[in-house]
Length: 244
Image (cartoon, rainbow, N blue to C red; front, side, top):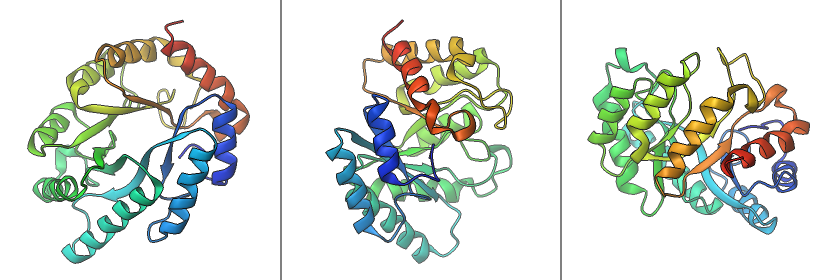
């Protein structure tokens, strides 16, 4: 998702040169639904470069497709793309309404259950995002409790103070399989180098490391969507992971 305008081959080269280990491929730009041949090629190219595929970042929004048959068809395409890609995890979205006004919450939860029940060995994890059931920590916890086997991503909500964001991370820490690392403040339009939010990310990474589990920390977006800054941002992230 960081470089939608670039080809998969360009992104693989950038990631490898920056010393990164894994790539989460986005469904909207590089792994289109319904074309498993492309998904397979992207996965093979990723591994050939010495990288791993961490996940398929899908744009499947649970509970938003009215026709049950169409909903199942789209989800089958998502799973087929993930398997062709060799992705161990699929990121999904918990609806398209803010939790405070999600009148179809039950519909979203039912769809998420179907996702988990049909995914086999692929992990299903929700995006941690505004205008979904994960936009409030109590709502997110309730959702995860209601859908056994469902996991989640985490990222700092836009405009939220560090202490409040970190409190949210602590609350869902045992359900988190990946985090999207970026430095936006105070809005999504204000994109800074990672160092701008160093205190937040050092503490977040400390919390994640303390779990003893393997949790992906993926760079999501960089200032100006500029490929030239990826190596710098990756170096910053690696230094924090090493505790420096």
